[in-house]
Image (tube, rainbow, N blue to C red):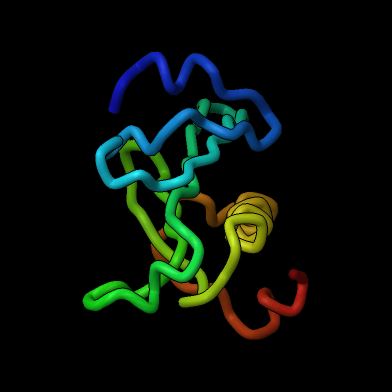
Length: 108
């Protein structure tokens, strides 16, 4: 990942100029910096209706820098995935790979 992307992040979701992973894909991207005992950078990236393309599972994904990546539901908007990531942070599961339980998802 390009370090300059991390430097532009704040504690609010910020629209990035392009997806750092592969700019040629033309994906939309947002980033946020979470601060606890360690700074964690998270990116949400994708494109509306991407799940309708062949071999695409979901429209938007998220990646916790240096840890793992994940997704929410196949046709979720970027805003819904950002809310999902914020909830994972509140539950102290931001960089944990497990899915949220039904009770945890009700908090969305």
